[in-house]
Structure formats: C-alpha cells, structure tokens
Length: 206
Image (tube, rainbow, N blue to C red; front, side):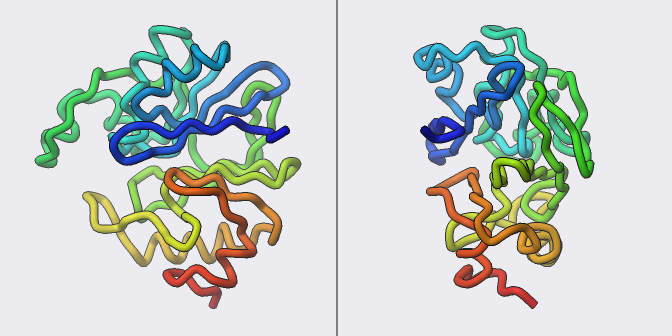
C-alpha cells in the first residue's frame, strides 16, 4: 500500500497528496475539488500544508478550512496569496479566491514535526516566492510542489520567478538527496531524485 494518496484536480491538473501521520491525516496543497475528494475518501483532515501560494494549489483552502477546521501552513512570502482576495487580480490574472489567514508560518528547518511526522523543510524559490519542499528522510519521500517534475521544472516566468534561483536550488538542495527518494510533484507523475539527476533536460548536475 502506498504511504500516500494522490488527488489531481482543477484546470491545471494539480496534484495534492494526503499522508497518514502518527497523529492523523495531513494534506499537501489544495487544488479545486480536493475538499470533496477528502470527504469521499473519508479522510478526517488534521492539517493542510501548502508548498506555495499559486492559485491552482490553493483554490480549495477556504472550503477545507470550513469543512475540517484544520490549521493551514504556508511560507510567509506566499501567505499574501491566500490571505488577499485580490492578490492575483492585482497581477492581471482573472482569478479570485476566498481569503484565508494562515495558522502556521513555515520556513526552512532541518527538522520539524507535523502530526508526529518529521520533515526537513527546504525553501527553493524561483518558481514562486516562498516555495517549500517537504522531505521525509525516513520514508524517502519528497513533496516537491512545483520545483522539480518528471523531466521538467517549475515555470520561472511568472511574477516573482527566477530561473537561476530555481536551478541552483534544485542542484544544491534536491540533487544531494538519495537516488531512491521519490519526488511527489505538483503536476504529473512521481519520479525519483536519481532519475532526474541523470535525465532532467533542464537541470544537469554540476
């Protein structure tokens, strides 16, 4: 049995991942439809963690908060994206969200526990300010958001994007993880650190 469950939703086919930690279920990211999926899966969510604040990853945050009453965690630089209803409109995007104030502000840390599960938290900007990756060394699992994909990387041409920051973060922080570490990306199928080190056309090891 997989140690996680995957939901893909919204027009950008965005992935969310539910993990059963020792103290209950936690969810990474909240694309459109995630709340209904949690209900159908009979998952009693205890915590929602966001890898970053782009619209396709946060559309169900308010619904999840209302339904489950669980805390919401996000990086301080991404926090305005969920708290300001007009954030995306101000950049010229035709999206509107129901604003939610985050309960936890999460920054880089060598070790932090969520519901009894331990993660190393890495900040890898370049796709989005305040972009986070959550690494479970015990499970050899990386919840990577839109940083590293199977055969690709996150876009760096959106507001706040920076390709060099993104590429250097992948090389320094992700490629140093173990070959067998499974990467759960924000879009597309899972991959491994080893496969991306060998074949990713965007970021070659130095």
